[in-house]
Image 1 (tube, rainbow, N blue to C red):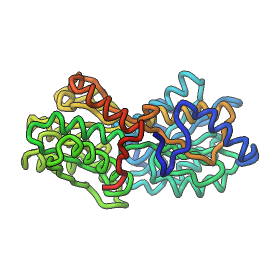
Image 2: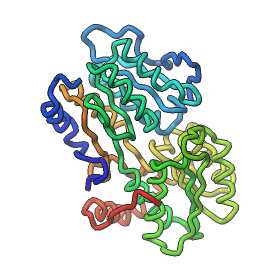
Image 3: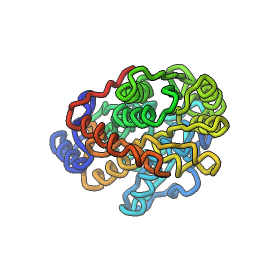
Image 4: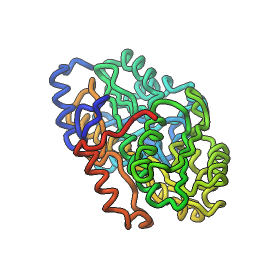
Length: 358
């Protein structure tokens, strides 16, 4: 089942569908480093891309590479393009307040990178402006709908994956009390909350769900505030929650720390955080993670570009194409696989419509 709001095609047909979009539009349609100059991170491609090579530029969201979550998932797709497609890559991280996103995109464009990918919905307006300035360059933006002939929107059905996380949490919870920590109170993160709550209630209608957002809409520091994540989760555990799901980027580290101290469980997000979190004492508290396959979206977009595809369309990655799902590292949800598979099938078959708003 594809998202009715944005989606037009499935991941399995990304390259072909984007090529059809190119034909329709015509070929003429054209954290981490907090320094203002935002030099490329370690391991990035050289400043002078090789002539004739596939030159891919990627601008991270706040938190940059090393957030063990959203940005790292995007980098995994970029790195795969380097390994499998021979891409010359360059990555940039924004200032701590994200104020130089447009500057990063222009740096990449001026350096000859094409395509250029912005990681996160906050790049939406900046990419729209920069794409109008560089009409011969193709852009993609994660979590924001396409808004120009040379821009592709890479979207995800976060609410569907979060529904499965809710089913898992409610089934595993002994207290019937769970929690959700969101990084920023905006429409995107509310999709995670809405899906999670619906999944929980599908199993235990009388379950208690605590909800806490770390910062209001527009203040993106909530994605890079482990101290706030820890305080929010501590309160939930103290009040009786035994499982807390977070959608808060790097702030999730604090949620895991709180879970370890309370000897409770947590659910990660975006990446398989039981594998990406380095602190071994925290890995065991992560019951599962809601996978948002940004790595797949980034790689498939680059591959489609290499095949000649142009922008002007949106691609949605949902449960039908495994664009979202749950991690099984640690085996803690293996015993409820049948229940999770049944819920997934009902969503894919259209028997369950997961809400995108709380």
